[in-house]
Length: 231
Image (cartoon, rainbow, N blue to C red):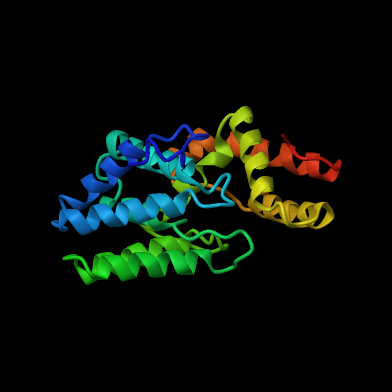
């Protein structure tokens, strides 16, 4: 359905593969196939809405890739892998750069849909909590929530080229913010991560990405202080 739509024309995302992954999530949970697939299509449409440039289906695909890698290389590390995967699917389902309520609305969407499926209420609550953890507020997290957050922040520790593209795309999303205000706000976000004792909670992410993430953040912050984007 998506191949002819042009919706993913400028993206490296394979929508059919993503939809297949969504369908694979529902089968072991015993969810009816047709409503589950319809919801997957709604999610994919939402993930590609304007004005997303970073928080789009490419980010979703990357997050699911990290989930799969953790599952493969660290079997048993996730207490409830289905809940983590579902949280990743919904965590940016609602995203408007000018809103402070994206996580809450995404969590509400997840709860509303999942509550109508034959799923344990505890699983639905856990998904909701994981999504709210992606607000990235300072403070202690426990259990699988740490994996959700580490996966969401994995982009910070990618190669210099990937990180520069990330900064360009974030700026595109905040096109409506004048440059001086953007510099102040973005600098505060970057400094906030640098001020943390560690960015990644789990050793698996820490040893792979922490050092590169800190280098990327320092470079981006220095560029903003010099009056330009780290791009």
